[in-house]
Amino acid sequence: MHGASLFRLLGDEARLRLLRLLSLERLNVTELTAILGIAQSGVSRHLGLLKDAGLVSEQREGGYTFFRLAPGLADAADGLAPLAALLTAEFEATSRTEIGKADAARLAEVQRLRKENFDVHAGPDTNERQLVPGRSWAAWARALGHLLPPLRVADLGCGEGYLTIEASRWAARVIAVDRSAVVLKRARALASRRRVHNVIWKRGELERLPLRDGSVDVALLSQALHHAKDPARATAEAARVVVDGGHVLVLDLREHEERWVRDRLGDRWTGFKDDELKKLLEQAGLEQVRVNVGARRLGDPFTVLIASGVKPAKPAASVRRSKDH
Image (tube, rainbow, N blue to C red):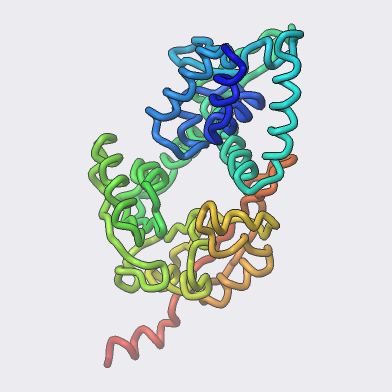
């Protein structure tokens, strides 16, 4: 490709972001779409242009097409060494920006999901790798669901419904609440495609849930609390809607320094300290509160905390008085 045409090609921010990701990991179109946040048709078009320019190569494996930097560019071969040096400098500079950090965080999530879906085990020869489908955290979560009674579950801040649908596999009923009508529409469509029928979808705020007192056995707040306007009020509402003896379960981020999440991801809070999360649940009136690390990876700025508490039963005398009145 002529020099001027090449530099015009690389003058597009999305294509530079795409190349940087492919310098870190081989990825398919679906994964790139999730990381970049642009339409799949746009990702495919950018890949086509970069492939025609000899900057990207593709490889088919297991029903997927994976893309990576062209070997000559990745290895800084003689003819591409000057361009490789320029791109390396650009990639290093981008890694320190908010956009670069956001892309890296989403890439880490893609890599985590890969590992959960297929465990890779090294054989006697270190070059030998074996894929073991099904030996994943997702599969084990579904298996453990077989041991649970048919609970009534509230998924609060359900987003696009992925956790809702997982819970529906073992729950008697799931009530999914989110404040966004657009997101709820996508969640309903996903449930329809998965043929899930035991979910009730409701629009509402975490601080003012559209649920009756004591109407569910378990209230889930998965990566929702750091989006709440008032986390204390949100946890109090979660405690209100569970029955006596019911559980509130929270998955959220430990406090971190990645300020870019406010603008890029809409986070209101940069996570919570362990003691702070424990205090939120205790102030909501919950007992037996526990907080521990749910997920942490070396080099990842985000640590996931798991917190849970039990709503105490009312004293028998209080119950009798309430019935008398």
